[in-house]
Length: 165
Image (tube, rainbow, N blue to C red):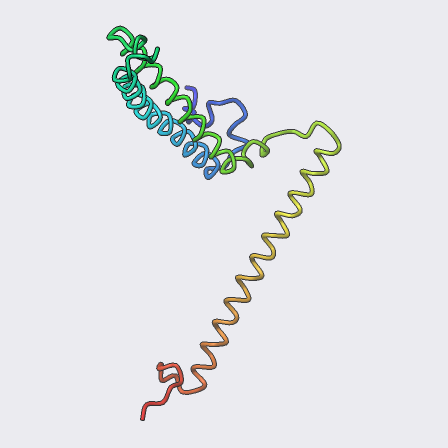
């Protein structure tokens, strides 16, 4: 009997590349793009209908008034919705690229020597940043422990060393 594959493993090669946080970020971006498209759709529908109404009530001398007939109302509303949906999804996607930029590089195989060196340098910098963060956490922990010991040596009255008169 074949084993059941999760949705993440059903994509060829993806299970080896992304960790669970990568999947979560990728799904968040997908959700943002869809919700941006839906918001743009409704905004575009309103804009298309409003534009048609403005054109319909324009002065007689303007050519746009002649274009705004009952037959063009649906076209204007749908065109506005289409453009709004496209622009909303486009903007949401462009804003989310920074959030998932490292996912694009996580499974990429470097093609040139320069890319290999750059990838190795980025990995080295990430390791160094992790070590620095770990040292910082340890220093904070030691400082807190030393403060707790000094309070205990002073009697530990808990009022921060202030004396009441």
